[in-house]
Image 1: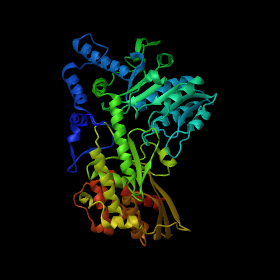
Image 2: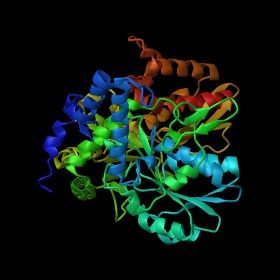
Image 3: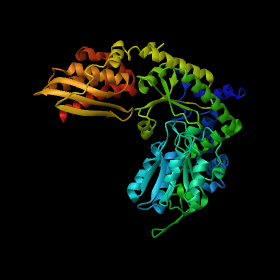
Image 4: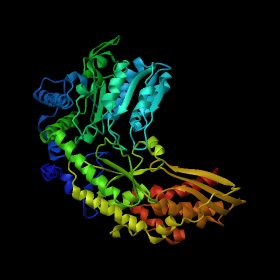
Length: 407
Length: 142
């Protein structure tokens, strides 16, 4: 992939020119949140400067323009994940809200005491806690499929946990703490064979690979914009139309209704049924701009380039004495979690920061994963399409130097 | 290479991190309290031996970053022989030193704990230094 236009891409991200502690920024915390290209920033400025008004309401020109941009972004999202219809694209705050929405609508309507919800041991908190809350409310039981020491789902055990009582399977597409990419097609086929719907948490997968929800045949797919080079505060719930139609609404308010009297309310059609109140108009437009930007590069090209970065980083990391990689799945995205002998991840984080390198140090909102690997925390370098091998060299040199200092 | 960090990671801190003092389980402790920082996963168990209101021995077990390990190690040294009130006063001064907005910090008042003053410049790391003291505070108040 020597022809991947990384320098051109870097020039599109103004923040990458920042100096941190007088050193060039090496931003390797992309799994927490990605930086934004100028095109996304400009799209928001342009909307507020020229096209902004509330959507779906006015007959005046600006409202029409604003609505066209807003709904245009919905079509971009639909095409990006190859959904069958715009009706299947619900705008929410992020992946977390999307999972909560499914738990509190689909879950409450379909899951009862004694029923089971199946997740995996590599989930982060947003794909654990909403289900625990639903279980508390309904008396349902949360089942957790185990992982092995490489950080891979033990598929046979997972399949054994699918029972006559399983009502929903909710699985991470790509793990944020380990990088593992799950065999989601196999998981979906196994669940569907027993008539069980599957939610995929795509927060981490979406910026790293082409996602086709019809090819996957998942019932729900959730992701956040901010990990997709789009603004924070916007995310997407994809759901199959028939499922969404049958679900009760989430929040009540304006825009989600067709007719209101004090006696009864008739709910609006999809997707508006789930979008109460004035939506996050500007960030939806920003999300549309991010998708345009990514389409111009090509998700398959991005995936190939990032695989090259990960392979390079992994090989270099393995040469460092005392470094242990956490998460060595065969099928893995561009995340390198690691620990160092006798050096706490927070010390690693502070030391690298002084060199201008931003990594994550902590439990990555996946405490059960930390418990499994018997570490309090890990250091995590996560790569994006704008990272380079030279930056990985800076990271590895930094790690070697701090090992020396701690000696 | 890490010149900017010299104020934060002083040699004393590396020393206490490599060889923590009073790092042992205390049999027959009068007080035993767990400290936990959910943000970073640091855990420690603090043991105190009391004679009336005087701390006669202090020790700890657990794992954490260099800042938190050095902080608890230094603390167990410094509180030995102090009364509960003296230890609480020291906590107050330490807290002011690590979190205070005041430009003038009284480093003499905290003795050798002054090596931890550097965390003031690193808001994300203040909790690493204060976990030990919050745990002591809990132990004295229980």
